[in-house]
Length: 598
Ligand SMILES: Nc1ncnc2c1ncn2[C@@H]1O[C@H](COP(=O)(O)OP(=O)(O)O)[C@@H](O)[C@H]1O
Ligand SMILES: [Mg+2]
Image (cartoon, rainbow, N blue to C red; front, side, top):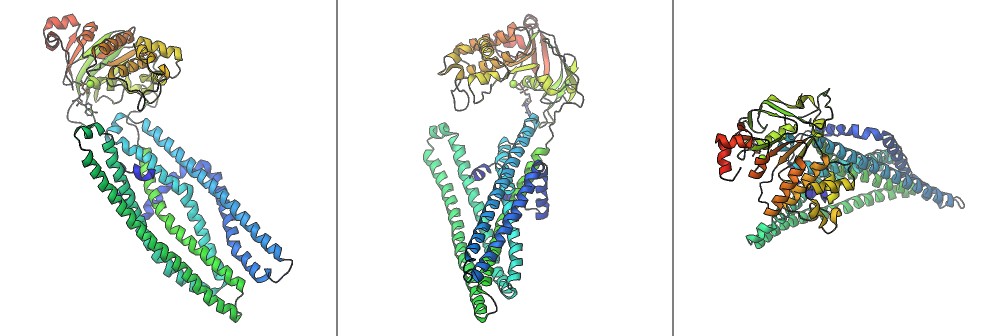
């Protein structure tokens, strides 16, 4: 079920080009590193499989003895039944053990695989997510790994068991009666081959119906996320109709599949039992003629059933194995993705310091997805420890890009950025980032309570420290008024916070982190006057005693800065103290006279 709804974003299996089976099967080998740690369990599963299969193959023999000798020998009859029951117990225990062990391996391997891929994704640079849809990654993490789990955790063991069953059954059939063996082979081919063909059709149709179900949820998902728009345009009836049509399609394809399946069931039961009846008939004549015992005949029929069951299961499992091979290929691609930004082999040690200076040296940069236009075009800028610098300029000037480069989400195209005199490329990115706090324009709230949300800035902080940070950021007053105070669940399905409140949470986070360098992206969204004043005071408190770069939109913020950097189209066009810039009568003076800073 999961599987079907989550394939919306990933390339659904039927659309994937069908590569040569051998090549796709090979990709399953890539799972070995994940299975290897559990190889002792694997050996155990294999031994249990052998034991279980052997027990199963003994059952018809025990039956034969029972029929041929059990009814004649007076006292021995009990022993025949006890032996038969004993075999059943061994068979049952071995099967249960194998089922448990194999499922355990499957679940474990899938869990490890998910964790490995997730960790890999979290190490990727932003560039990766510009080209990869998060929906696709999510679907691979769930749907593709589930396919792998099916195969490692059941299909492979079922397939192996069936192969044992098939080979062992065939051998026993031939040993029991060569003549009947020849007949049953012909019958099995006549019955099983058409069934496999029909089974393929069923598989194709069931895939189709899964895709239809995925369509249904895609339609519903999109609309449910846009309910206010749908209702505002009174499109409810239209959308209901659209959904009804998709549901109808999914119903049709499910019914087509079911029809084929029903036919297949009829064919299977009549075909298999027809074959058995036929063999019984031939065999009964042999028994009457005295060339075969009744026990031989009974065990023969049982072996025939075992063998046919083996063939059926192998056919069923084969499709799963192929699909899992495809899924493994896609997962391995994700796992192989190398992060663009990595720590150098021998990173320069960044000494702990409460001071932060930043130097941009003729920095040139363009985003990987836009190689023609320079987002930054020769930026040179020196920021002294403790200084507050306001970045001002029209939208698209490159202000946010400066922050991205400082955090080393991207590497500069030309020139260099230095933090406390060290080139960013020589540092371990996580060492650098531990010295920087950022308050983004649109703060992210995680689905956790207020404590945890603020503690994102410093996982070790005590509750008291969290509350102190919230006070500094002026977030304390609104959090205290929430239904459960700091324990109130914020985020997705929790309390809805206003833009100003979210930003104050983000400021509290930065305060708690207490970094020497603070990057602030002032909110542009129309905060109401009260929360604007509160955010402003929160920001000012946060800026105390550290180097601050602030992307400023409010004249009041700009005027309080030590220096103002005016940017336009990736270049610095003016730089100076507020007073100097006002006097020079440039872009900033014009904007200031209009009481507005873009
Ligand atoms: N991820 C990105 N990929 C490609 N281009 C980008 C990306 N982010 C920003 N840009 C472009 O880079 C330029 C500078 O953007 P930005 O630094 O966000 O401007 P500002 O913050 O000053 O409004 C703009 O032309 C913008 O369209
Ligand atoms: Mg911006």
